[in-house]
Length: 121
Image: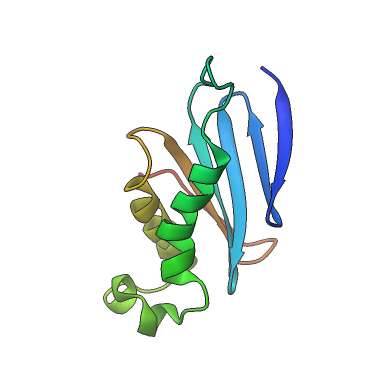
């Protein structure tokens, strides 16, 4: 399998050996999402990038971007808005848009040195 990189609206996207990672930034956090799927022999893609971007916009950016998590996001009314819980929130929301078993991991970057990785466990 080959390694290739594509730039999408300032967010880096890479596909390597059946893994996709797309990284976006929102307010204080940046995040990346890893998918684990085989490359489709017909399309040559693991997923249509336009679809993935749309799913991430609906599941992550719309509910979280430019929001006060504690006041504006109902999920965090009863859940402490730690970086760990932001990763769980992203996982749970994005799962609704992706085929079962495709989401591999969510990484939330609070800073360059503080990173949370969640794999749905």
